[in-house]
Structures are given as C-alpha cells and as structure tokens.
Length: 147
Length: 214
Image (cartoon, rainbow over all chains, first blue to last red; front, side):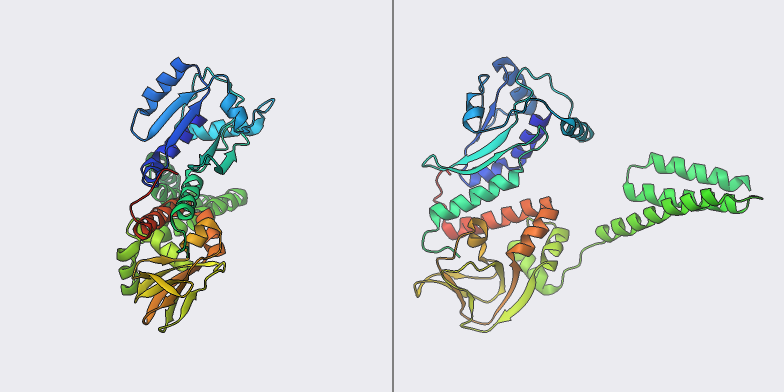
C-alpha cells in the first residue's frame, strides 16, 4: 500500500515533471504478473511513464536502497496511517523488506538527487524531485544568467 | 431537568452524523453546554463531570476559532490582486495570502541593485510593478517585468548568482528570505507544490522552450 501511495504522489506531479523534461521510470521488484496487475489497477499505462520490475533487486542494491533485517513498530504505525488514508494492503509478491527511494539522473548519467527511504512508509516527497529537476534545468540551461 | 440531558444527546447524535469537522465541533459544543445545564440543574451537580465537559468544550471552541479563521474569504488589496493575477494564479487565494504574509513589500528607486552578481542573495523576489534589468559582467542580458522573479535560480540551486538585477525605473517588489520561505514551505507542502509550479513556469519563460531531458 505504501507503493500505491508513493505512485499516486508521483502521478500528481507527472505533467510538471514531463514539462521539465524528466523521464519518469518506476522500478518495482514484484513478479512481472503482479506488476501487470499493479499497472492496470493504478492506471500506469500512460505516456511519460515507464514501469519496469527487477525481482533480483539488483537496481535497488545499485541505488543503495535499504533492506532492513526486520520492520519495526514504526512500519505498523505507517500501515495504519495508510489504511486511514484509504489504501488497502496489497498482496505483494516481492520482497516486503526492500525499501524504496528515488534518484534523478542528468543527461550525463550523473546522480543529481538521491533519497533512500528509512522505513516502508517513509515516502519520497515528489516536491523534492520537482525541486531537483528545477535546479537541474537552471544548471543546464541558464549559463550566464543565473539570478 | 431531563430535557437538557436528552437535548445534549440529540446534539451529540447530530454531531456524529455530520461530516464537516466545523459543524461536528459546533454541535459537540452545543451538546456540551446542554449537558452542563443538565448537571447544573441537578440536585447534586458533579464537579468532575463539569470539569471534563469544560475541557472538551474549550478544546472544541479553540479548534472552531481556528477552522473559522482558515475558512474566511480571502480579500486581497489591489497591489496584491495585481501580483496574484500576474504570477500566482495557480495558487489559491489563501495560499497566496500565506505566502505574502511571509514576504516583505519594498519600493526601490531606479538604479537600485536588487541582487548582486557572484553572491548568494539569500532572498527571492518578484516584481509587482516596474522593470529591472539583468546584467552579467556589466552587460545587459535580459529584462524583468511585473510578475517575474529574481533570485529564484539561486534559491533552487543553492549556487551563487552569475548575474545582477538592477532596477530600470521605480519598482515595487515582494521579497522572501530563503530561510523564511523554506520554513513556510516545510509547514505547508501544498504551498510548496504550488510555488514550484509558479517557478517552473517563470523559468520556462526565461529559459525558452528549448528544454532537453534532465
């Protein structure tokens, strides 16, 4: 359910990110069949959005995203908060302990923004990604006139 | 007087039925007052009951005042209205008012340096009226008019300015210290998202439509 809420947050800012020239790629770690169901349920088959899955979680390791040994009481509180926000538990086939995160990579494949969740409900604020994208736009396009 | 007891419970039931939090609290306060009347007219009023009812009602009345204050219609003065129309239409009037409250209105005569080159201005500003010129190494490279921002690129990147902004005529402006702005936006995520949209549009105008993939 945390994944659904995170994706909903990204979707609200998707047009803006698109206008800023950001290609959004959502990476999951579920089985491909589960991913198909998630894409259908969330309406993710849309322009400007790529959804992939990596059950081996190699991408997650490469991105330095955390996978704690166990999920503490904080995770339970976060689950209750998600339920209160109207999200229902998902039957995830992936690794429940794998936490999420976000990266923004520039055209030269440099990571200009990186954030790793500290618990399942520690979601990435899409406004942080938009802020990083705006800063990147300024750095790439505003040479000589940055005020 | 049993009628007060029944009235209190009818009001409590009504409060549970409404979905608007303001009305829920108003009905709960009315129910509380009715309960108080009931216990005060009883032969042996319970001080414990009175005390707790007063606690509940005080909390509810404070929250009612807060909610009512937030819901009041927003009235902008003419200068603020002009600025709202020029740059902030994607914000709600309430969000705009909140943003303005954190800023400072200033008037600057011609030839005033609003932002120096090669510095961290620590402020972001928007022109309300008048024009300013953007100068890099003394050379004029752009003009800013009402509704356009200055200092926002440094605010976004955290980097030093690579150009200066100087007023070309008498200018009215609103400016925000970036630390104050960050504090405000941290408290109001919806305002942060709305302001990002405003800044994104302003940047798109300044930097042109030729934008590649980030």
